[in-house]
Image (cartoon, rainbow over all chains, first blue to last red; front, side, top):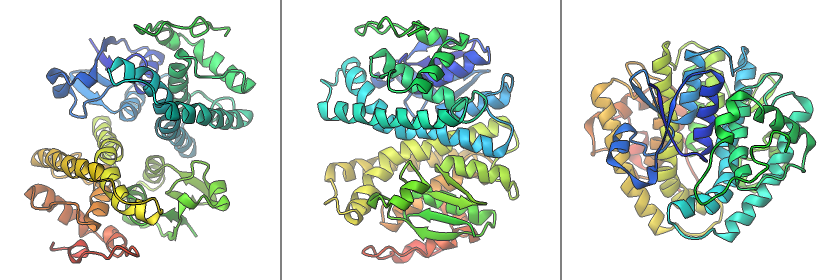
Length: 221
Length: 221
């Protein structure tokens, strides 16, 4: 049986969960409190972080490498365009969200509000929270600009770029940090992706100490 | 003419320079002081960072997306294995260096010692420098472990993974932060990659205020 070692609100784990679900690859989810540095887990992954996917006897780490592997190994349904320019644009946007958005927004909001509490590292730093709350506006505007020209973030088809973006936004939505009224096109895009069967497991997540807000799993939010 | 907007010691820019040179794609290097937020540069790249590659009338950002694009568009000589497992391993290691190594080592040494001075952001934080100096040992040991089993970092052929690692190490070598005596196999690997024609432009870099150490460009270091 395939196994994904994960943390429910980690956007990198969510991206892999979405790709697995979209490609209908069954996997058992195993929560891994990686910050406790369990020796068994460190043996599985010397990078000491999640996600780690155990598949066909192999242990795999690094969400982007895993997603490209799954796309090449299970190409149907495809989450990458056929043309080289299109694939470049998908990879550029995956990096945009996993690097820039993560640094400017996710790490400033989710990590301050949730990870610190769960890991016993104290209270949120209000300077970081303010900076994240300011930066997400600019990112939502950038997404709106892209979606004014395109059906999905990287072009006419749904790709890994949409899953990367939706992973970060869904985690932030769980802690009520996304203002869906800021842009109609972004809200429509999220409603489309949220209603896919692949999203169901993510909408069912429940984090002890952080009750799920009612709109989070509502498809008509 | 193709143009690469870059900063000489940035490992992400160096990775793209190495790939371009290895594939014999001519490019004009333009130094870009991205932290000064020149409006022309921000128009070229909303992410406001380097590298940015101008090629065939397109502006491209994000080093990993650029490298995959160059590999697909100019597949000869190839820097990716043909098999899916091999490509996964290359991408895992590229992420290892650009994410984990960058976070634990490069940002703690190069950014503290060089970027802060160049950007006028004050003096190095000694806690960070100590933490980076400690972490690089573990990373060199990990590379030695890989190279005990393989000719190159990701397998039997030279790939993007070697260029990612060599980009970080060469930048740190410029500021004398790599102990080449720690591992014979890592030193041999670096001697091999350093002697490639693609490496010449990187070995010729001169940073004002930071004189190049004599061993840096010596192929028999």
